[in-house]
Length: 112
Ligand code: SF4
Image 1 (cartoon, rainbow, N blue to C red):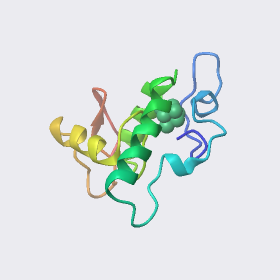
Image 2: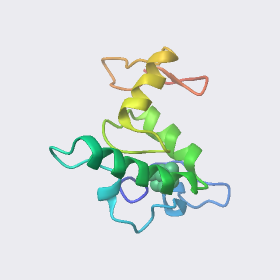
Image 3: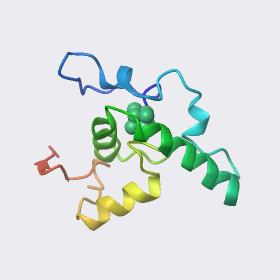
């Protein structure tokens, strides 16, 4: 979610990737579920958020950031929190409990 974070990943032209996201300037409520949201309302909101991500040129950077930082909520890089958690688990990238971050992302070993 580009308006929610200021990471250190930069694009080739030096701009923060967050400034290039398709969601820039949008209401972040579409990407984060409100308390008590369930069923059809939640599915519709998630579908709309993922449609925005599909057009995004920095989707890969956004998803990598969300995975590395284990963002606990929201649609990032076209994936929900449940989908990201499943991906981390499938690839053995579970949290190091002392740091709270995955040990490896994209083949890179992260510092302890
Ligand atoms: S992938 Fe989705 S959430 Fe991430 S910057 Fe792009 S539009 Fe925003």
